[in-house]
Amino acid sequence: MFRYEKEMIPFIKDGVGKIFGTHYVIEEFRTGHGIADLVCTSQISQRPTLRNFSLINTLLEKTDLINKYLMGVTIGDYPKKELKIIEKYLDGLGLLSSTLCGKKYINGEYKPCTTELISIEAKLKDWKGGLIQANRYKKYSHYSYLAIAEPFIHRVDKSELKKSNIGLLSVSSKGIKILVKPRKKLPENRTAYYYNSELFAH
Image (cartoon, rainbow, N blue to C red; front, top):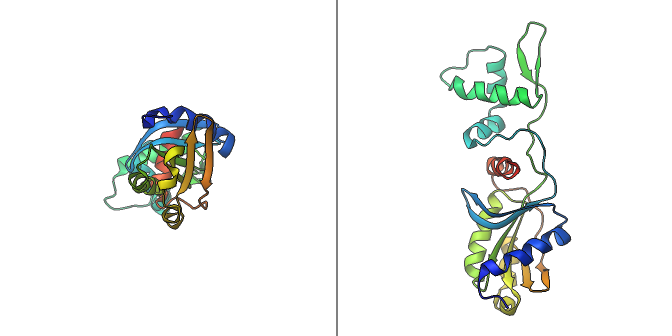
């Protein structure tokens, strides 16, 4: 059986495609919310990616401001350099149109690069530490799972995982099994999801 957590990763990686129907998997996915052992998704947009947290937040939270800037309306002291970068990015995605007088406006919705993100934290037996980490990944994930080596599964308090909406995977040399299935929920932080979706696609 496994002696180290890293020995579990190939078995989890091999199993997620069969269980979750995902085609894309990244190991050691580094985010502002920790490093998930595995993050996976089923679809990735092939469009250009934007990997700037601040710009993504502006895109999501300040659409009216961006449209005012595009239409030439005075917008005070907001950094125009940021808005110019966003304008170029939106133009590259084909999300800008022009009025008869040549002014631009947003004609479509900025969407994430992935349909959903599934995060997995692998622990040999430290389920409490794993639960803390898996909870962090809910900031940007639709599903967050804790993966534990099969011989130590009996130590896990499944009611705690259910309460936190964290899934549980049992890992053995034969593959993985879902013991607790979480409900699909929107990521807790929309900007974090969009940012990590761009990062994943990149």
